[in-house]
Structure formats: structure tokens, C-alpha cells
Length: 199
Image 1 (tube, rainbow, N blue to C red):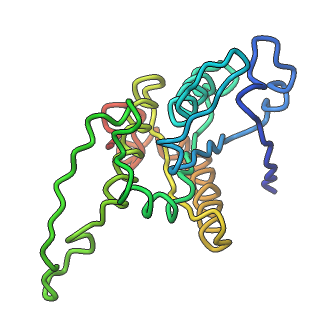
Image 2 (cartoon, rainbow, N blue to C red):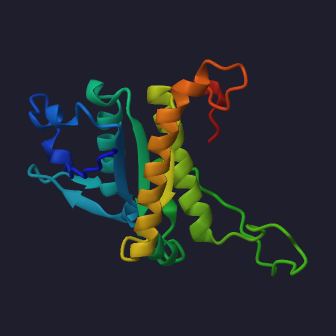
């Protein structure tokens, strides 16, 4: 019987002598949550230094994914507050965050053709931005671990959105359990080769 337990960890708790890391010995997945709307937000540390919250999230993410305790675990990145992000990006450019300085989407102002079968024929700036951020984290994760990062976009105040993301996490765990059974087969749909992962 699978057991699920959520353990919340703050960035300031990740030091060299972390006793809480021992709690993760039997864990199969790490869910890492980032607020999409933090890209233009700043925080001031005890020394009076101001830092961008998204950059701090990235640094914490790097520290977690490269920690030996988590090297065999799957990671699910939850990009939260998509609703706030979609509103904010229309007013505040994503390039306010240095990490996103190369975000220059081309937005079509024409109405989508009603006969088109494409789901994302004319994505919004918010959709383009959230996809871009997901890809930035996926590439970072792949460069650090050689593995695939799973991503889910969530409206944190909508229970259905959160439930869907947690259901996705359960599916990933199920895939991980099944992967060893298929990996020895020449017809395997699972590849352990990092180069096969799409971004």
C-alpha cells in the first residue's frame, strides 16, 4: 500500500548539518513549488541585501536537486499562482527578472480561425510566459542531473487544480515503479538516456 506524506521545507532550513534530511530516506518524489508571480518581487536578507525571489527559488532548487539525499528521486515542479501571473505579465514584463532576460515572445493580435483544430493556436502572454519558465527549470534540472523534470501549473486557491497536480504526482510515482519492469525490454517505452528527454 503506497503511503503519501507532505513535508514542507523552507530555504533557510537547508544547511550542511540538516538533521531533517534523514526524514527523506524512504521518499520517492520531491514536489518543489515556485510562485510564478514572484518574478518581479524582492526580499531583503539580514544584511540588508535585496534579492529577486525567483532567483532565490532557482538557487534553492539547485541546492535541493543536487543534494545527495535526493539524487534517485523524481522531481515535480509545481508552478503556482498562474492566475496572478497571467494578470501581472500583461503589466510587468517577465524580463524584470534577470534569469528571464531572453524572453521575447511574438504575440499574434489576430483572432484565431474558428476552423483551426489547434488547441493553442493563439496562446496568451501568460501561457507563453509560464511555458517559458517551465522550460527554464527543465533545462536547469537536466543540466544538473541528466534527468527529466516533471512540471505542473496550478491555481493554488482552486482545489481542483491542486488535486489534479497531486494526482499527476501519484501517476509519476506509478510510472517510476513500473519503469524497472520495462527497462530491460527492447520494446521499452522508458528511456534512461538523458538525451531522449524533451524540453
